[in-house]
Image 1 (cartoon, rainbow, N blue to C red):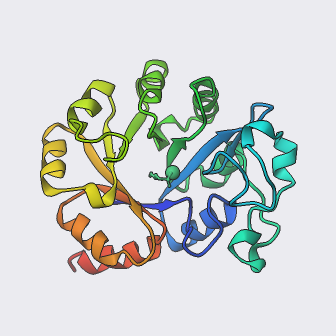
Image 2: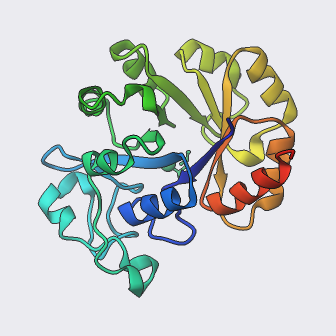
Length: 245
Ligand code: G3P
Ligand code: CA
């Protein structure tokens, strides 16, 4: 089944990486969610894209310099609209509680270093969720660490020309032992998709913000296996239209 993955939840209409954005995506019937993990000063995993809380909350500073309590006291909704004020930053565990049994998850490791990886995997293992996630990262060195600790878990190599210019992405993915290649949408070509499929890799694109219906259609024509999008509602409509009968 095609993976229509709500990027940071239903983030085109609700504050990104919040339980509200995840719940609204679930309400649409979305069964794949993407979100990002950072780690606090007191070693709690929280769902946030940036290294700092500045853009998405009413606070300031690096997540790594703040305690969980300090982060939980922040407002992660108001930046997206006054009607969302009071929406907190969710922890990893709270997000799993919400999504468990309802959606599979692309969990992106945004934190610095490899130390928190064990903690991520322990939490997933304790909840029997290892088969419900794909662990993703642009920091490709993290992925073999994940695989060594949990060979059974799916991993996704996120790639872009900017950081991996002219690389043999497929060869690199195979060396890393990942099962999924995650190229930026506008760098995804028919040749790349065909070669990745021939190599046995799943192709899941990213970088689809608003107003990207035509790009979704182009990627579907290339027969990619999934994409993250801020507009899972639009992708859902396109998929429904393209489904025969
Ligand atoms: O799915 C990968 C995508 O989320 C990468 O971009 O910046 O949203 O983490 P970013
Ligand atoms: Ca992400």
